[in-house]
Amino acid sequence: MKRIYGITIITAVLVILAVVGLYSIFWHDDESRTIKAGFVYVGDASTAYTSNFMDAQEAVDNAFGDRVKTIAKYNVAEGAERESIEELVKEGCDIIFATSYGYETVTKELAEKYPDVEFCMATGDNANSDTVLANYHTFMGAIYEGRYVSGVVAGMKLQELIEDGTITKEQARLGYVGAYPYAEVISGYTAFLLGARSVVPETTMEVCYTDTWNNYLKEKKCAQELIGDGCVIISQHSDTAGPAVACEQTDASTPVYLVGYNQSMAELAPTTYLTGAKINWIPYMKQAVQAVLDQKKIEDVVVGNVNGQDIGAGFDEDWVQMLELNEVVVAPGTKDKIASTIEKLENDQIEVFQGDYMGINPQDATDTYDMTKGYPENEKSSAPSFYYILKDIIDIKE
Image (cartoon, rainbow, N blue to C red; front, side, top):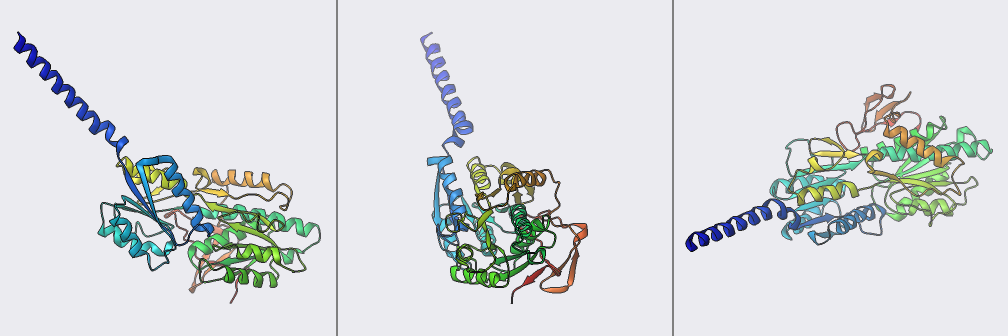
């Protein structure tokens, strides 16, 4: 009898140990799993573009604590990213976020080289082209929505200036400081202009390129030249406060105002700043990290518009946000107009890239697009694809 009891006790202990073992494998393992997440930045905290990504990295740190160790590489120029990404792989990163468009070719090459690491390319457009890799992903917020709303704010200010006699309808001219003639930039300033024209249909635009993402002096000079050409509201797709300072310091006889990008310029330009928009990178990065922790496919976890290995979203998923509104300077009724416009965008009641316009490809004048039929931006990719200059209403400064 004692022998039987002994065998029974041993059997029970073995069963308990087996159950505990299975529990740790199937339940506790995910909760105790730790990973490393790498971030490659083209700038640092001094630039608004990189600062927004750093906010997302901080959100990952706060959300996951000791379960996720984050490692960052700063001021990595486009063309020099290979070494930094390789270093992150060697440091044991399970997921790497590359955050500048020019990184995408090398990042995809390294994704093929290191299939056990997840590579997430912000603003990229090559995840679903050529070789599709299970560990290479692209993502971006539908920033054209934010640009359009910013344009509506600008249009309301132009309308106020027209009504009080400060300018005429013919003087309703926007200036735009753009980094490069990429689709991302062209899509953005076109949406901005179309937002303004939804309020003041006579609005035109002049664009000045800096051929760099981040150069304070060039951006300020571009803004000053646009102001000198008669532009009364300046916006930008560039990374420094140069345009804000140019607007605030101008001695132009006509008032000049600013619409920012990525960060509020209310402190630097308190009398000229109106508002702005930014991409909120936090939702994607937190959810992508969660997917890797849970050993799930990123596109099955991140909430957004999934297209193969690419994901995007707009105001609807909080991927796009408006910046601080300078209510002292904006036209009356602007706050309510912003809310109603965002609601219409979320409900697909506004077709941004539509109207009685002809778009011309800046690299091939024979390639034109009739805007009356509408252009479905972000239909196949989260990265902007609109690459046409609106004939007769947008001028490119030489």
